[in-house]
Image (cartoon, rainbow, N blue to C red; front, side, top):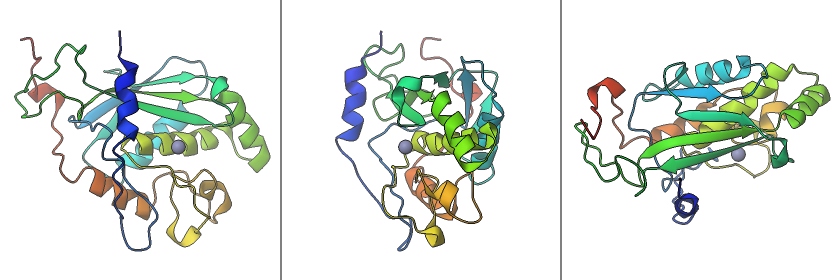
Length: 217
Ligand SMILES: [Zn+2]
């Protein structure tokens, strides 16, 4: 029922902006943003969820526009999928689209439910790869899961992958290596990541779900 072709459009109009002169991070402002101030993850697998909660707490500690929680809604659907190897995680955002029930409705929060607004998102986790990485670095699976989920939440917030050389003076959770190679190691968003988030959500005033009645009511 979901038109996945539309999601391909997100990568087309990549717009990059510097968080600061020395920080490497960029935001993909073509990806949809959350209009709500509370987004919940939901996990369909059987592995430990401590890393999810810790990664959510890491982000919640550094930004106040979108609280990542769990329990009430299924906004960020997390599942296990070892086929994404060699990647440990993968995140995909889905915007409102013509097939969505509220497409192109202007809600009472003033947002038009269109392709710029997040409908829901998915995260796939390679649990075998996470376990192997934990063994390689002599870390717990929960700690590696926290690093991976903090990275995927970063993508959720439109932060772009960092593929440049390690620079621990301006580190980023969007690097796949720096959270392990930098000393001290880190498992959540860094100063640079917060800077990119602030750019990514600078035009967005998130609102409580309760203040936005259903489009059909
Ligand atoms: Zn990534």
